[in-house]
Image (cartoon, rainbow, N blue to C red; front, side):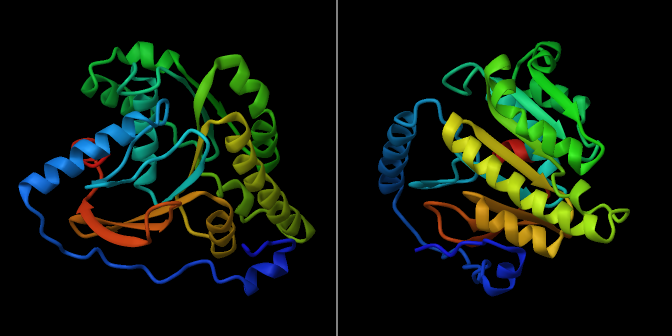
Length: 267
């Protein structure tokens, strides 16, 4: 039975981050690899409207489904979220031909980045930007209200992907002090649980990015989310840690630093 958090004090009693396992080096024949690849493609085809995005290992793709709440930690996640906006808008079967809701909690939305990804996917940038519906929040109260309104917003725009960008920033604003600091944390916990419930109930993919680390909020996100990943720059490489995934074990791998040029090869 999974351990539940009913109060903020419970966080200190929950061991949420297991040891990261390293990828094991193995060899296979080209014939076995082909059969595995063909089986993988068949299984991905059965996922229907799911958005398959990520690093593929034979028989073990990193996939986000349209019923999950996923969290990407680290500044590289901002580039990835822009790429996912474009991938969701792609026509089937490459994408889901879906509109996107983008809730910006840290003034990080970059239309030029989305435009460049659109060109690389042979889409008209203006058409793509027309289908990304953005709203900005400047306080944690505003961000919470926007998230609470998501059910009606999703119905209005027919969106299947929601990006909540730089989610933790407003809840840990240094100007929040005294009793309001405790209220902000309690509100954050309620909001995170709401995102998970909404993803499952509306069968949409909700992706939150966390561009800076906050120990307590990181633990909350890891506990509640279906998927949690962290990106950290290591000189010319980026270290990708899969912290939590429903069918992939925890692992750590190195990929070239995410950029507009290199993301396409891994997502």
